[in-house]
Length: 312
Image (tube, rainbow, N blue to C red; front, side, top):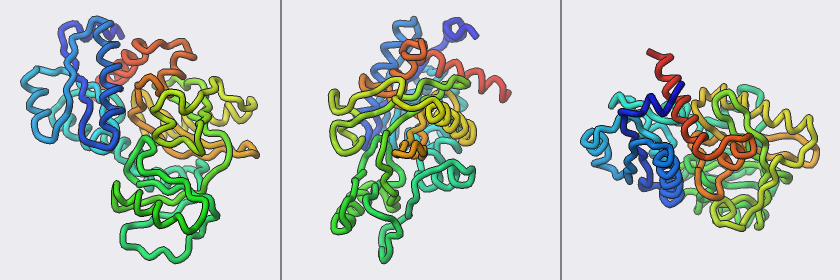
């Protein structure tokens, strides 16, 4: 479809910021999306979301379409998607159920296991539980169940450090996942509708791909395409497509994985609102596939409009 013609008499609202731990990343994503859409001649308004007035602003500013640039709680977990559904406003990215499932690491693990998609062994711990038997060999990764961007994550090498890691993770919610650490290469595969993007390999400067490695320039390097043999490379793309389809993702998504020294692949999670910052993976993968940043943003919007039209 001619997406520019479709939007010639419509106004796009970019919702960004919010109040999650990923606010600053969201603002960077929103700023980049706004710049791209203005360059493409779109009528755009950026809205820094608060808890009370952003729906009123969407109405007052006569917004016809919402590009979701929110990361973390409220933005990626299906909440804002449900609000926009109630308002009757079309929006970018995945729907309510997909967003909620993908954001929750426990539900994601259950889905992956049910569909025979390999994922690291894990244990779920809730606040107040007495942890008597870990059942997992060290090292492990301790992470909040409902956070993204590696917020609250700790790599635990010795059992004496486990409780400090749990306490840190519990700052971000009442449920925590303890996951077997996979030693090997961290890779990611972006999906854009039917397009499977090239596999990218992330090489963090530190011990693992934490928040700093994700967003501080120079704290990680990327190998694109990833240095994998052809069979492993193709399998990673196949897993990404299977996850995208199974979760019923829409628009763009990014599937993160680990590859161990035996070339076994383990899916970690799916990100339904990938970052669009200067250090983000999805735009880099898209560029390698011949899709520049502006084209990427327009394609994400187009996919959501086509899907909405198909439902009506």
